[in-house]
Amino acid sequence: RCRAAALRAGEEGAGERQQCKLVIPWFALTFVAVAALNSAVSLPGALTSGASKASAYTLACAMAALGMDSNINEIRQLGPKPLVLAGMLWAWLLGAGFFVSRALVGV
Image (tube, rainbow, N blue to C red; front, side, top):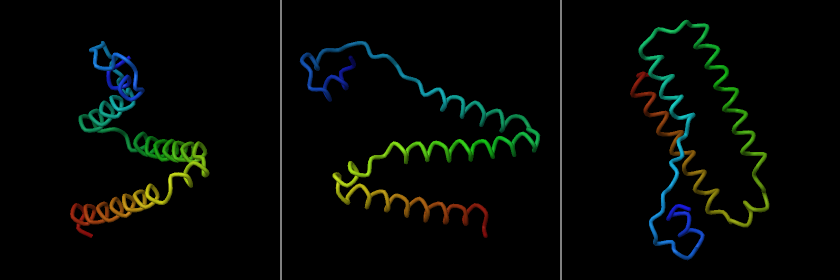
């Protein structure tokens, strides 16, 4: 096991150096490749429109899956702090997104 994982688990020999396997998020590399392709080549409108709809659908599916995997009793046990933090982050993203879009688009 990797040193960090061993430290979290409280295992003996956690200070020893061990070879860790590199985990690559392939979806992130694919995202970068598609973004580069879209920047380098003019893609047809029908393709980008379809890709946009597919992206919105898969994002909605991912959010639904996260919600279905949540256990309300575990959330209650954590107390209000995580929910307050989530609300603050939501407000920050909403506000920052609004001001950045106003600055870029000028509406």
